[in-house]
Image (cartoon, rainbow, N blue to C red; front, side):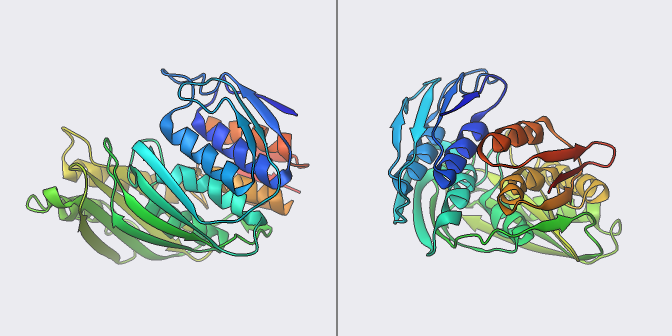
Length: 333
């Protein structure tokens, strides 16, 4: 059984471990879950993600309790099926999906996942739209998402259905994003904020910041959604010759819509200037590079999150990553 200490990591370590355990058939035990967080232990959204993968692999799980700092996960046979995931908080649907996408690589047919509750836009997590527009295109894959109701921080309450097509793992090399072909801004807000034109203000601020800097026309798409609470989010997507780069930001109390948009614009400009893929996408690509056994990417920054993910992946898969901090590249094989 693989032993893991989560004292220096967050919930993503648990989610990734569960997914890798499922597809490799290797059981694991983790202690000090989310030990680096102010409130350590499992939260509701972590439990739902673990439970979802467990259902797909008929896994034996112990320690799956609110606040638990220990977990043991023993996978059995894969059983692709329709899933219903209920998240009582604003916990990220995108983070749960990250785990399910890895777990589904073993399947031959698509699976459908129905999410009740949870967040489509939240803090410290990729928006659901980011997975659809940035991460999966970098992998050369797709995702069918039906968002009936957005879930914004801090209440969540989303209503979402996702059809997951098993990702076909293959070697990748993304060392230069190439020419920027398209720059798209997606700005979303709760229906309660339509009168204040929050979605338009976010988008126009980001557009004003980026227009003229990158030599390409900026397209804008705004939308309003029924939601449990006022909230908003913006995603900037740069389609390049060799990759897709993204940056996002969410609305917060006492932060103007203009500042939310400009923050996303600055983040995008920084990512585009420094890497072939953005730092968040690089982190998500690591398990797939490892599963392929060969790959190399250049990112904007070697974050501690990336280092922690690599250390975990090497426990489950027979690979050795090489990190070159002089040019922020990560490679296998």
